Length: 295
Image (cartoon, rainbow, N blue to C red; front, side, top):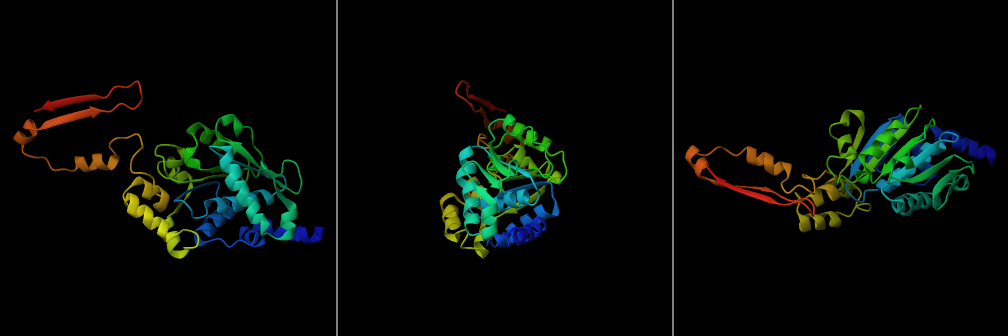
C-alpha cells in the first residue's frame, strides 16, 4: 500500500491532469487551460466568469493539487463569508473525493472547516473569511497558495495583504469570481493591472454551446429575454463581462461617451436650449441638487 501510494504521489506532483484522472474528473477545454497555467507556474491568475460553468469544481481541483504536490504545503481559501467556502468549496472537494481513487480517499480528508493531507499537521487547505486582513496575514511558507473565491466581493486592503504574503518560492495567488463590481482590485486584475496577471475569461454562452450538460442554453436565453443582452445582469451572469456602469452611478460611462460624440447644433439653438443638471443624493443625509439654465 505504501509503495503504491508513493507511485501515485510521485506522478501527481508533476501532472495536474493525472491528478484529475485520480479524481475521475474530466475537465473541459477552458478548465484544462487554467489547470495547465497553474502547473506551468503562473504566480498570479485571475478568472472572471459567468455563473454556472464549474468555477467551484476547477477551484477545488487546484487547491487539492497545489497542496498535495509538496510536503506540508499550505493553501488558504478565502471568500466574503465562511459559508461560501464551507457550503461550496469544501462540499465540492468532498464530492470529487467521493469518486476518487481509493488511495486518494484515504490520504485526503475533508472536515467541516479544512482539508487535511496524510493526517499531517500544517499540510492542509484552510478556510479564512475575507472580513479583515488579519485573517489572512502571517503566512509566508514555500509552496503557499492563496485562492480568493467570489473575489469580486473582497476589499482592496485584503487583496494587498494577500499579495504581500507571496514572498517565497513556488507561490500562487488566484482570484476567481463573477465580474459584478467595477473599480476594485478584482476589476483591476483585468484592466489597469492586467500585465501583472494571467487572466482568463469564461463566457457561459460559449460553454453552453459545447457543454450543454454543464450550462443550460435555456437558462441563458431566459436571462436574455428577461433582461436584454445589453443589461449588466446578462453581461455578468452569462457573458462574464464587467457591468457597463457602477451600481451607484445614475449615468453610465457609455451614455456619457455617446453624449460627447453628438454633433454640435447651431449656436443660437445651443444658447436658447434649456438644460438641467442633477446631482443625485447617494446616501440618507445627502441632498439632491437640481440646477436649470438657458443660454
